[in-house]
Length: 232
Ligand SMILES: [Zn+2]
Image (cartoon, rainbow, N blue to C red; front, side):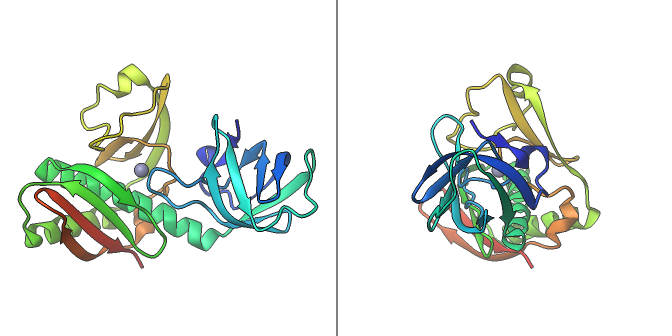
């Protein structure tokens, strides 16, 4: 299992680690600040011991794999310095927290459940299940999100016992995915607005998002709605 430095601090941009396994196109470390692809988020990019990291993915048994062009001379047991492409990564964090905020408002206002999301640095989307559709009201919810961003509440992450967490209404707004079968759930809280079981990376304060710009709404069948949005 790889120690997740991004859970201790999502703002670690550089770190040192020991190589635990090497294949021609992937490197495994004892610990990493690279966040893997998953939960709708794209994986981090950057460099490791001077080698370019193209993607970060989940392997078996809580292992994180760094996908590289070529692992070159990097060998098991050696120390490497990792550098994250921070500009891209910070945008992913801002996009991800934006998606939580929008989901919380949609859920509160309409009861909609989230059926999927795709978080990317340039453009993200949220899919939700909702019978009726009113564009003006949707835009109003985005405006509410921006008003919340303007108030800059903190975003906190912590662990909670599973039984305790599952009693919180709306702790998971995903229509399908049940929280992972673990003793302790990681909670992401936008103070005063949302509590969600989540393993991903987020900003510390909502104000870091600056602004959410809705791009377009799509109707995908009877009750499937999709929102594309971006951030500055
Ligand atoms: Zn999330």
